[in-house]
Length: 98
Image (cartoon, rainbow, N blue to C red; front, top):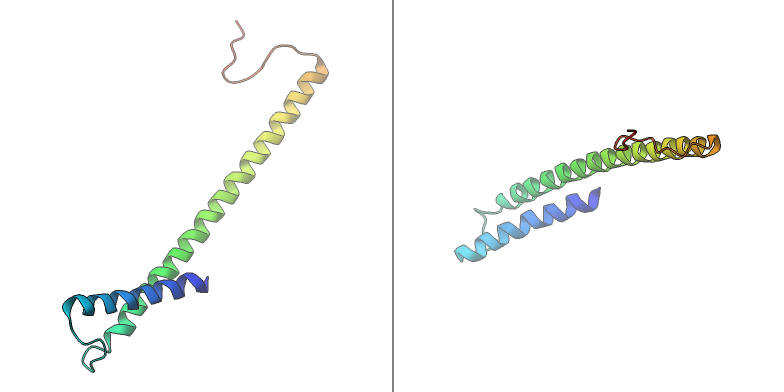
């Protein structure tokens, strides 16, 4: 978790350095030193938000994977019962029984 926050904090500070480079202003002047923590804080908060988004997406993907595995297990069980009973008809949503 900390690596994403640190990366985006560094990215925010790098954006500030790039901005001052484009403007051809001195990097360390006393009037503009307050902006480095601001840009770093904005970048860090974005990194924190991205970490939470990533955690939520992984939780959604894990839940979806569990549902799919349960569905596959139920289907395999149903097909095994069908094979045991000797039924040759395919039973499914898309099969036609006419």
